[in-house]
Picture 1 (cartoon, rainbow, N blue to C red):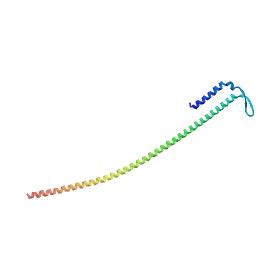
Picture 2 (picture 1 turned 120 degrees about the vertical axis):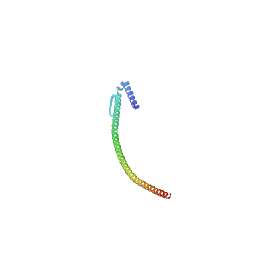
Picture 3 (picture 1 turned 90 degrees about the vertical axis):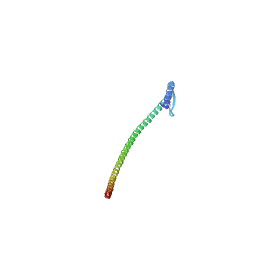
Picture 4 (picture 1 turned 60 degrees about the horizontal axis):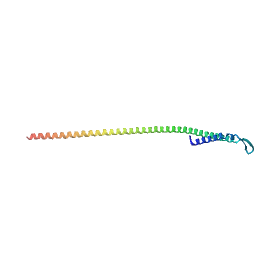
Length: 164
């Protein structure tokens, strides 16, 4: 319990004990003036009745405040839950949008890679043809040089055989 509640219970207990100890005085009649009239009544009972009325009034007021706060808390909790659900849906849609954006970017990148790969393959084919042509020309030139050397050797060999 809170200290205020304990303090209130202590005060009410003390008032109850005081009333029990002085009950005969509370029931003693006395003359009471109400401004326009006078009345013979026990002042202690009237004051005790007023005290009970004030305490009951404040208890009702406290219950009203607590119920109002409880209803407001529940309403705020519901609104918070609705806002949380809206935020979750918005976040999910952002994730979906991000996924779509990434998929489109990856698809575009794959298309660029495919186009680049095709360009590299075309370039490699052209280089391969050029290399084959160069190798073939080099082979032809080498064959021609070897054939020319053979002819020279043959002509020198037949010329040396004639000289002998």
